Image (tube, rainbow, N blue to C red):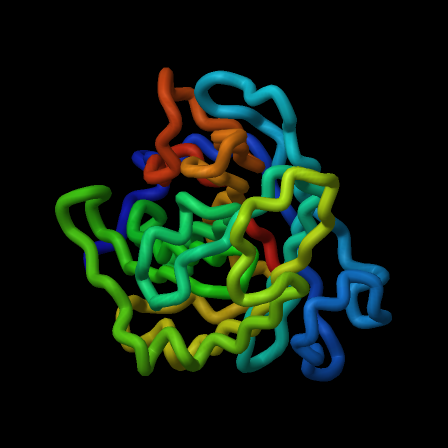
Length: 233
């Protein structure tokens, strides 16, 4: 893959997040309060895109890493929670959904994976080299290598309108990512580009929120030029 020259880096990163190494593998059980995450800093996913909804969920996320995996956890203080899609690469973003878009190759900051997981733990994952026109849906075997835990049932239907807190936690192997992209291996001083999102486009409270602000007139998460920077510690 051709390198992106430093002076023409198209990423307009506005935020950065320091990712800490963990000393031992994190157990994936959707427990936000467990010891492994206590000292890991969090990000707030609170910048709205499009019309601000009547209710705005409070969404936070944390990321950590070791030599073999990236660990990711989301906590959502939500209402109007729905989760109906159960097939891989289905329309999970129409459900109550959290998303992590990340470019793991320092030389290609606009080539990214979009990992989307609904409240019931069903994922969608593509590798995108040009939004909407050049992308590769990951096969089920590859997606299955991501360990995912969820605090809500697999299916949440009818929609739960009352206040509901839900958690998604996952473990992403670097070796799986390497089947689709070059990977700048996480280590002290390495950087990836990424954004975190919260949506629920087909719930009764449609909304789109980002971590790193996206300057665009309507909801669109596929704008990697607005990704923030992940800095491995």
